[in-house]
Length: 545
Image 1: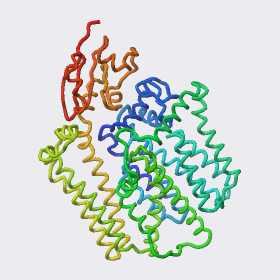
Image 2 (image 1 turned 45 degrees about the horizontal axis):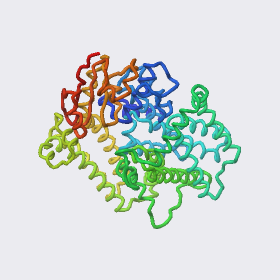
Image 3 (image 1 turned 90 degrees about the vertical axis):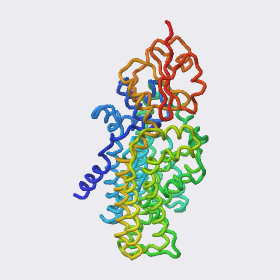
Image 4 (image 1 turned 60 degrees about the vertical axis):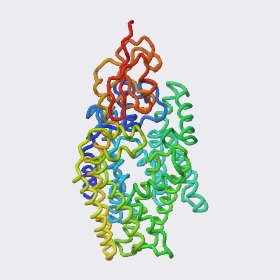
């Protein structure tokens, strides 16, 4: 019954309002467009973008989106629905694993720590690959851990390999890299005593190989090694160079996890204590929990350090940390509920400061919208200035949402200072869940209107029309998804220079950002049809055929 109740609660958190806002460029629209093109082309064996092979990602998540689109239609809800289902499965799995490690209470704390923290919750409302990938690779590591304690170690090894293979089919060989590094550093920490023999390791490798071969093998047989070679080249480039606009410092992900996983992330600081405390368990149960904690710490640091080293810095690259982070937080919550741990005053103060900072940001957001005319002269980015010109309805009273969240954070902190720690923590987690829902439903659509709304509106006017629509000087998938583009009959379409200067055979339109528009404003082949919120829209002048 508890599993069902958790599944229902998760569905209520993750499913409603999935289609309330347009998909965001790049990643959300990228994957949704690949799924749409599968449906249009009836080619489900290869990932395509703009009806050309797209070798950056394997197809598993795209398949899930395509299935969803067959059910719900080609829209935002369908693109995000697979992750909502994964969110439900994740919370149920966390409860089940926590129950097996200790009891129902640990499982509930773990589900709450995950769903009650900002980014872990938010990503289940998105259409990006990572929540699905993260669940598969976490389960692969969990079943590898279970090998040492299960009466059926071979079955655990096979499950581990299957989930590792599914992770590879979701996002690629990064799953293998993370798994190898995690096992290696766990092996070093345990001085070679990992409870896993060569036979079980071989089963993991075999099961993962057979799982990935279901698609990679078919791809090689059907199309040769071209895709695999390009895929590997891309992965190497991703790890060794930074994409334009996606660089950052070594500590980028450290800050992201600290703030983005609030309040769960703050509980990691409770491990910084002057002396060791006895486990609340003894015997074999204590050994299993202690060993699982080691696996989680190793996974956490492997992912954090790995993606701190990687040159490309994108928020969701460190999202696999959410699993170990939420468990380690849940374990401390569990100990607190069992009166085995007390928070230090500085732990509570840190939670209060970061919670108030997030609440203040939510409070100021509508005020920025209301008083944007006063702010625009002080912004030196022309594109950002123009974005803020969007007509988005804001009201000063909306600041009450953030103020209310701050008040609840203060209430939670006061309860904890008064030694009502469990009540204070519940106040913080549940108030965060409410604040997340408000932010997603009320604020995100307004933010989207500033960032890309004008361009999306323009693209949607071409749905069902047989026109050429292309972007200039910036990377986007929005013009493909929102025009519902069909495969081009004329392959010259892929040549931007031909679209700009050639003998085009269809009405042709272009979009660029205001900061890149200067050379196109003076192009004799183009005329400006509109400028709006940072985007400039051009029409190709008619050419006699």
